[in-house]
Image (tube, rainbow, N blue to C red):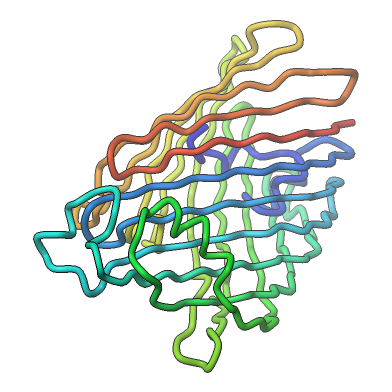
Length: 305
């Protein structure tokens, strides 16, 4: 649903999207999910990629989670201006700056209902971060992104928290979430620089129609670094059941920052869920962005009771 999920989530993935969503979800849920995205352009950050792997267990008042996030960027600080728009290889004989931050989040989510319609939730987590950066010989941007794992990184552990609020009134839901409240920083080897998990603030609304159609919209309330510059996304999506065992969904998003490389570039998504057996659901999605925007895919398995 292109990320329009803050007011929708009601299973164990709420520990990431909106911790308060656990209050109105299934009695028990287990989620295993992996997503990846990549984008490139000729100027600014030449390329960037992100991936996320989530394992979460949730009941209405408690969640347990582990997830791994990876963010990698490739820049060409020494290339001549007229060479910055030469895809897909950086200037011959030049160098590229590659930065990589891998974070491992292990946390517990606590949820409290304030009224029968409003709940708040907090995910308290330890974050193990491995930060690396350096100058490498220029080459194909895809290869540079793939080879970023070979950089020598420095690891450290920080405490952090995510906070969420969810309000439900009949078929209307509204949510607000703040991730990375403390904005933890992780130093690269030799303390030459630090890479940071920036605070994200997102609000969303969702409405379920009489036909069962679900529509939702999310808006980032502050800018954060993305794959190709700063992003402040607006996203909208919908979900509908088309067969007894199958639901389909789709959405779009765009960066509202006109001054950034991928500003206003649309990104479309499509996905489905299939009830493979009893309470086991298989999820899949693809992300297809315009030039300079994200492209990627995701797979997941959910167990709900």
